[in-house]
Structure formats: structure tokens, C-alpha cells
Length: 239
View: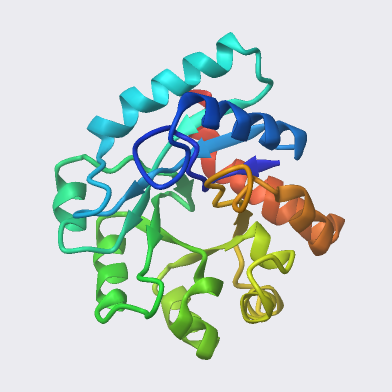
């Protein structure tokens, strides 16, 4: 499987804090059948002030440690980018590491606030489209406003947004409401992929296997292997 959203690079956000934490997470990932993993630390101005400049050296340190420990997993680098006033400036300055390409557009992993769908997001998606960029929206099933009104996703999809569900949500680990919202995305064929959003080995592990099994073989293969691998193929060609 291919995990395109996690927080395994150590010491730069609220995920792994040490290289030992990261290696333990990578071992769990391989145990879960993950063969390719795109590291996506938070870019959240004012909280996690990351850009390509801070992510790349930390990623290279992790990549070297994984090689030294002979972990059978391919690593690449991107980011989970919080919607903010700084986002467009960071894009213009080439400070945002992208997740891949889909339908001839560059894809960015975009995070909404957890409690709402931000005002102006449709305008942002239209602006991104004009820059030849497409947004993959992270964990929409855990957004409180989306939980109340999942049909709002249709208008975002019409503007090119893709949606990434959390593996634990699909398997019931984030509670009944997140599970129901994830099922709505699946039933309406709006889920593009499933990813772990792993942060640690205890409460937020890279548990993709349970989601794959909950989805069933055909849908699990599409959302956990085929789509994410097609999305990130250029990243893994480069490593």
C-alpha cells in the first residue's frame, strides 16, 4: 500500500519527535503492508512554520536512517498545508512541496480548519486551478461542518477538489460520526484515496491494513494502492 499522508519526519510538527519515534513508525508501516510512504509534515503558519527549506533536511536525515536500518520502504517528501493567508505567498515563492500530479495538474495536500469549511475556499480552489494546481483535501470526514453537511463536498469537487479519507476513520477508530461521514464519501464516489495520518505508535499509528480490510479488496486496492501510486509516481521516480 501507499501512504500519502503522515507525520513521521521527526521534530518538526506534532508527529514523531525523535528519530527513534520515526523508525518505530516506519517499522509499523512496513508491518501494515505499506511499501511507499510520502512524509507530509504540517505547514501551519504560527504553529508549525515549515516550508520546503525546513522539511527537506529533516526528511533527508530520516531517509538516511531508514537506509541504515534496512527498512524495506520507499520514502518521498511533501507537506500537509493549512489554508492560511500565507499559503498563496508560499506557493509563489516555491516553498510548498507538492504531493504529485493528477490529470496534468500539480496536487497539494490541503488541510481545512477542523471545525469548519473556511469562507472563500471555492475561490481558493478556482485560483489554484488557474495556477494549474489541484487540492487534495485531507480528512474531510473529520471536519465538523462536513460531518453535519457532507453534501457541501459536491461544490468543492466541482471546483476540482479531491478528498483523502483517514484510514482510522474508515475502520471506525475516530468514532461513529467520522465513520458515517467517511461512508458518505465512499457511497457518493468522492473518496480519492485513504491515508494513515499517522502521528505516533500508540494512538495514531500507520494502520492502513484495517482500512483496506474494511473497504474490501476491490475498493481497498483502488484507494490504498492504485490512486495514491498514480498520484505520487513522479515523487518515487526521483528517489
